[in-house]
Length: 158
Length: 103
Image (cartoon, rainbow over all chains, first blue to last red; front, side, top):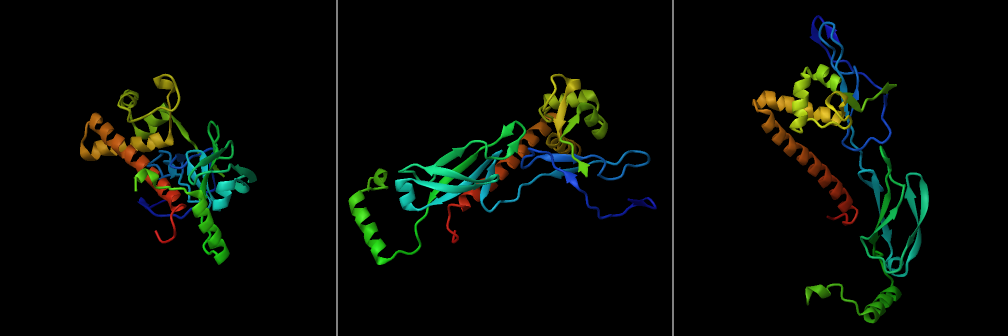
């Protein structure tokens, strides 16, 4: 707004249509919403820089979504059928026996909508230990340690 | 409801930034401006992110009195820095899901 040739600040709210498939970091242009033009010149444009706020459950990589899926150690060892959230509701996910922490399971078409189609959802497995164990459970772990005879640091040559 | 625009034609770039068509062609050759569509100069279409980098290039050229080759080099580094900073932010976010609350 121009008063007596001076610019003054005006607070304004705009309802903006964000295009489908816009990605983090992209910029979009609102025509004519910028600074007023001088004389008869049209107003400039307003540019919005799109930033995706962190989500409590999902991470974004391009148009793919990533979800970290906590697993009990026995679920990783024996396999499991899990219910996992997606943006379109819950889905069932099968974890194979002997799955490693950090491995990724791909669910096609459950990512974000992009300009060329839909991205995928990647479920990244994370084995989590129970925080408390009864004496009976400790005993079971001890037995497993003896039976499994597994050295995860074998390549260190200790 | 205001609709947003993701693309801008070469004609709009020339008018808005007060650049000659010949200069826009030169800036494309230097990779300062990157068409996202269009096979030939007059058909070129740019996205708004490209326009953002063009504005930065013009400011660099003006403020630091650089030639366009130097501006292109600086812009490459700035673009790379933005990509790396964003990648770093996303990786830290993903890593935080695997680290305990004490870290």
